[in-house]
Image (cartoon, rainbow, N blue to C red; front, side):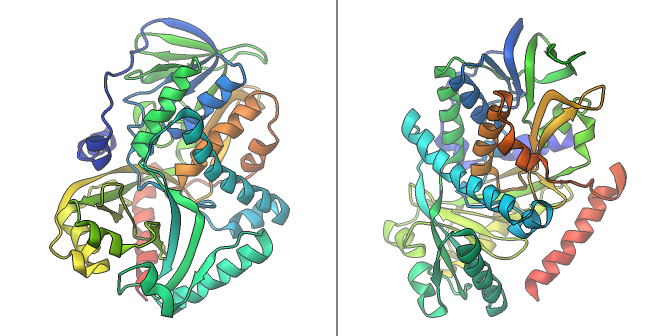
Length: 444
């Protein structure tokens, strides 16, 4: 439970929590219910699936162990970006070019889905168009330029190249050599968005329960029969089940789907948010108000907020140990990118865990049944820190599959995943060692 304690201690200091009041909590499940679908996990993936299923006429019960959006869904960097956490080359190598093109197109559909849901359900989540991918040196710039040209030529996805002579018009920082601008991607307030999706799901008849950790899953005994999901005080009998707890399934319900645990690892991510900036200074930092990522493997990412602050992320922990002096160290990182913020105070510092897969590709599928065939229990995990948009798409795909058309879901389910090396005791030290190598590459 140390992972949970660290996560809860950090999340309460979030800028998002301070600026998106929750109101009264939802009920705890204290009865036995029947539903077409039971969803475990009240983050973006689970909420998205609930909305899509309700639209298709399914009765849905969603169970959240803590509060809606309390995991990565409600405290991430807020950047909704094209593609996946892994490079498209990984998808091409496994599925071939045509399937890889379909996967890419679905990742763009995921961006459109955010805009559509905000419009349909009147979700005010501070959406802002635009994303900048910036290279810190000429070598990284050449790699980024090659990627940009190939995505335009092979995938039909154009972006605007920013040459070294023009970089100052896009960002007031000495760190960056050149980059690209993607107008289709953007950023938002993730907790406002999560809570908005929860209200949308409720309006469609979905039953949502908080503080209702799942203690057991009794799988269907035969095709066509129901599974039972149990909590401490109630249960849901459902024809189909979705596990959408990601890394928190391991923390809250380690016996629920142990076969999934070895394929993902918890990684700590950390963010700070500055005090309010003078409007002229805020406008000068990133004139387009786009979100920004550098192109390092262990990257920095940042964006302006709607109330003229700078939100800055960059530290990660592969050991699940929270870095010491988080606010001070992150303020130094922020000031190294924007020297003009040297004396700017950090008002909020928070973090928590995301799940990463070995190849950084998403891991979607169905648990095997007792006979070895695919069961009626679906799972979504492995978003690898790139899930703000993709979780929404994942919920849509799993709803399509549950409604009888699994073609798009199965495109992702065909991706192969390996367990992290080292077993239960050594896989974390092995990951820490491997990431040290990539950090070294970033500075060479």
